[in-house]
Length: 390
Image (cartoon, rainbow, N blue to C red; front, top):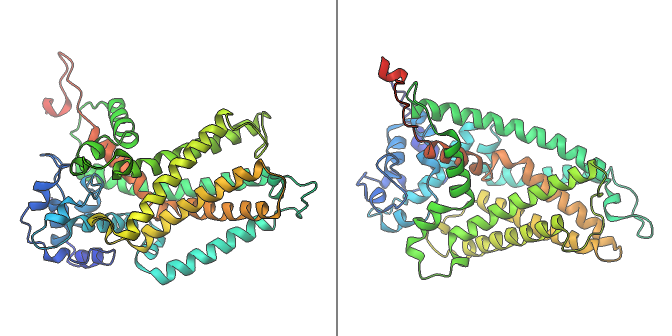
């Protein structure tokens, strides 16, 4: 089978941030020190070599690309200062842009000025969209979530959600087809699909098992609550919790149980879950921003504009969400109406851009983790696989 080679590929990846990767002479030190590699999954050396040789299809179909958490150990010990950890992050940005058929992801990753202009225009468009549907402010008679009617919010959310799903599906299909082709599942082999889901999404994604046990092995002297695995997990848990709360609120309104934004005690289950999730989100994003600002270690030294934008939008979503929660328990103030509008702008921008920004790596990493967790089932007695029968 012929292999397509692209000699420009390395230079294209360098546009996404891998400034020093050409210094790599493939000594293998990065793979040797990485606690996440195995005989089956070897990186960063393998992924760097793909770029040097111009093996575009192999790189874009590699699940190893997404198994790295950029702990920074490889960059700290690289004898050539080629910064393999930053290269892996850049290669993931390159992959997200390659999976995206619209070209928007590439612009957001490689053109800072155009990115800022686009984000400002998008924020203004979202704000005008919701403001034109709002009711005149009247603090005597108008409840907070009557300013922008909850029914309008839900309908807009459903439409936006469909657009996001379609954009995400395009990238997921592109990534999955490339990975399946590169991974080359043996025909006729039976896999433990459910077991892989439990391991990948339960133990690894939600439990952060490899990140916690392997990546943080050098951080044993740090308290668990400031280790990178917990900061990363806090952002993930917070976002997922708030997503569940939003879905439950919508369901309760459809069933006529509770309208969005109505007063309930703080210990009301959905409100309590939302509060805890918001605290996790704020904790994780605040520490992530602080450590990037202070450049605490190698993995935080080279933050891109896309990193800052993603984390800032997540942090603003948490802050404005908490201010809205406080507003529900206070007498009506004009600021609460404007805070609702600001929250809608931030969340709208964050979600609409999800398939094109660093947010997307959560989707692709989940697919890669699932493929990583797949294990063949033992053959039943007397039953031969297709490949064995051939």
